[in-house]
Length: 159
Image 1 (cartoon, one colour):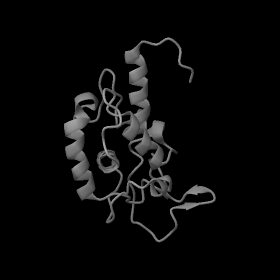
Image 2: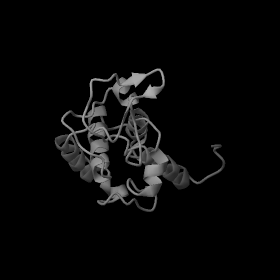
Image 3: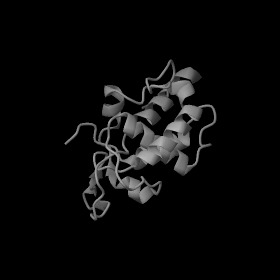
């Protein structure tokens, strides 16, 4: 995308939209003993129960303190903040890895002070977004390690 002469608010809104479309990529079913990645890419998806209820609950508290002012309590978005739920969000992140979502959120949010949230806080918020969007919880927490997140693909539609 070329950066033409857009007002700052529009550019900021585009950054926020891009960052939010990756968030739902962290849910899933039961963990397996399969390797996280293969020569063909991620072997797991958000349907493989990749977070816990406890983690999503922590993420919900962080979300309400830090994200809801722009993205709203019901994750529906606002004037400059895209929704973190719904078809646009789901299709926007579909096929991306959770690592891509994690890095986008961690390095661009909040837009007025990007990068202030730690890796664990970001991971917990992603778990909340996954739970809110109907991805199943499991018995092991989603990790904030890049290599593990690269092994999990955000898949919008249940297989």
